[in-house]
Every structure is written in structure tokens, then in C-alpha cells.
Length: 205
Ligand SMILES: Nc1nc2c(ncn2[C@@H]2O[C@H](COP(=O)(O)OP(=O)(O)OP(=O)(O)O)[C@@H](O)[C@H]2O)c(=O)[nH]1
Image (cartoon, rainbow, N blue to C red):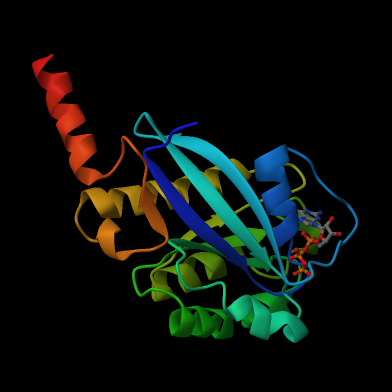
């Protein structure tokens, strides 16, 4: 299927926060109750619609375990979007966010769009990180923010789509130059010029 753009994402965050479950829910609408430790990197893809245009998302889900860090580090390059995930029931996963961001900023494009996800929001009674703390961290570091649940699907689709919508808007606004971002690939009928000429055709048509 043709697409207007292809965006590459990477999902990062501590082990067990639910990175693989968020991806599985987004691509397959399934939830896995057992912690299936990611070894290195896994991959998923799905096409969504932004501004009436098909956008293909290619998503690399990385292992959160420290021992895989040298492998996963090499996957930052050429990504347009990062989903940085913590677990609202495990405060240490929130405390590690700054070091994850530091690593992303060292290895990724400076134009990377990052979505902070406070996952497992179905476990309200076990919550140790408040929504306000998540919002504040996101505000201070220039990130988009959502709380989500890979179990109930709350905000899962929204998190992936909102990240793409932000990247798309930054291309349209000229903040991100698609020609210089390997994480963004215009499709056969896509690209900023093509979409604006399509809009012109629409107006005259
Ligand atoms: N209640 C609840 N449990 C979740 C949620 N998301 C993930 N889990 C559980 O948390 C555990 C870890 O989920 P994974 O998706 O395997 O975690 P991960 O971040 O990919 O872990 P690594 O592969 O080690 O980096 C599993 O037992 C999941 O069932 C959620 O939204 N709510």
C-alpha cells in the first residue's frame, strides 16, 4: 500500500514498563500478561491516517535491560519519533527518565519528536507517580505526554498517532526538513511539496 510518509520510531524505557505490550496492542490489539523479555530489538509496523493521508509507522521496540544497552543504542539514529515509557506503579522507572533522555539526545537526531508515556494507568491503586509529575517532567524537557494502559488500550492508539501528528505538523511548518531526516521518508505521492500541490488542486478543483 502506498503512503504519504513513512516515519521511524523507537520505543525506550526501563525493563518491564510495558514497551512490547504497547507495541503489540497498537499493531495487533492484543495484550500479553507475561513479561516476555525483549532480546535486543523487535519490530512492528502499522499504517495510520493523518490529515487524510496514509502514514506508515515502522517501530523498533528495544530491550530495557541494561545488558542490551550497547545493542539498542545503535537504533536511535535515523528515528523520527521516540516513545519514552515509564511505569506509573514503579517510581524508579520514572526516576530513570532523565538518563534515558540524555542517552537519546546523545545518539538521536536533534529534531526527534519524543512522547513520554506513563504506562499501566489501569493500576490506579498501585500508582506511585502522579499525573502532575509526569506532566511537569514533560513540560520541562519539551516532550508530549500521555498516560496509557497497554492492558485496557487506553491512549495506546492516541500515543502513536499524536506523535505522528506532531512530526507531520513540524514538517508542514518547516521546523523539520524531511530531506535531512532519515527517519522520515516521503512516499510516492507524499512529501511536503506534493501535499501542498494536492491541496492546491483541491482548491481549484
Ligand atoms: N496492568 C498492566 N500490566 C501491563 C501493562 N503493560 C504491560 N504490562 C505488564 O508488564 C509486564 C512487562 O511488559 P513488557 O511489555 O514485556 O515490558 P517491556 O518494557 O517490553 O520489557 P523489556 O522487554 O524487558 O524491556 C508484563 O507482565 C505485562 O503484562 C499495562 O498497561 N497494565
